[in-house]
Image (cartoon, rainbow, N blue to C red; front, side, top):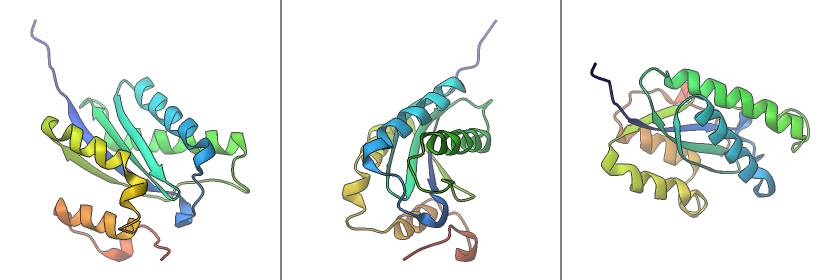
Length: 153
């Protein structure tokens, strides 16, 4: 019997609620490992998770049976609980609604990986808003700015 073999590469981007700078270096690696564990436990392939203080980039090898929206919902819900349980932030941590998800070819893995790896360096030159809108334009995604994240400039 013939099998089905696929690999779909998705970069997902989502922001901290209110775009607050709550993702702090002392514990971010624990959050990234936790996110990667969620991805892996869902039968998907975590390639890299990285962020700066107000948003996250996740690069995942996705099987077609997993809906992108379900994976991101589960990652956001579980990491919200994890961060709140650790009491790393004053008050309640949460993610903003929504996300961006962008697909890539196998030949682009190294480029996307390095882009996500160098988030801090990248954001010395470009704001999150500029970056996100650039992604929407690059992938030719029609959008109205009023429906994007709450921007805090």
